[in-house]
Image (cartoon, rainbow, N blue to C red; front, side, top):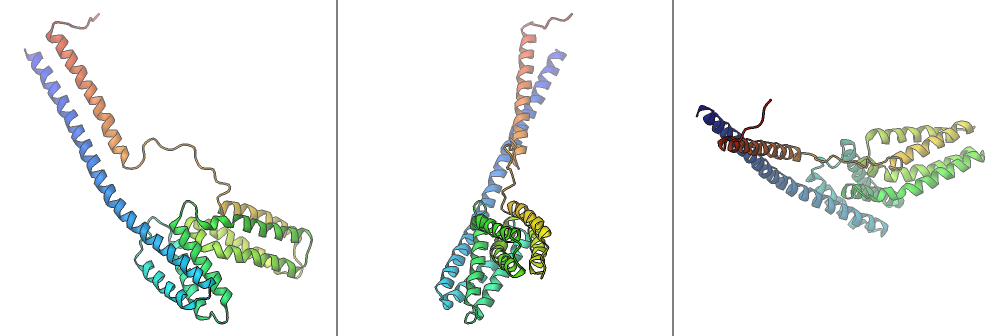
Length: 289
């Protein structure tokens, strides 16, 4: 009788544990769903604001090409207002935020001196358009399309170096490369690590000095061009292989999955205990040596 009491008590404890695990699982899933819902609403709002910023930057660029300075200034004002209300948390780095802010200031300054520097306004507007697009389209930003352009610039510089052209010709080829890089630099800063930008900045600075020399060091320039190709490939993600494997369970779902697995184990033990109890009640005992 005493043995039967302890068996029943054990079964009740195990059953209670199983119920407790299932309750915790249900609560965790419910809380997770609610949390995800709030986070999703916030993310939708942020994405909408960034898309509006991107559309405004595209309009500004079009107005700059059309020499519609009044609309350019109106677009700048709207972009500045939108920027104040956008949360960049999780969207880019501090350096990326600083880059797009600097680009907006550059467009404002170019719009002021537009009568004497119309080309400068178009270039600044292009930089802002690419930066805003980089925020709005992290998977396939427009600035990545500059890869072929920058590669061609590097190839042209390499050809000039191999032909032992004079400093003026080398400086001219370098200036084209630098202009294209400066156009995409803010957009790249939004999506790339700061050290990648710093490496390419340092490379450009050193290469500029070499091309500006009265007697260019051809051997060093050849080495620098080769290094530049590697840095450009790194910037555009041409040397990065994405992993073919992903974790089976990610993020907050790990807890829910763990609770589920634990509950299954407890349920199985409960059922095994119940079968053993039934067997003992019916006078069936396991054979022991």
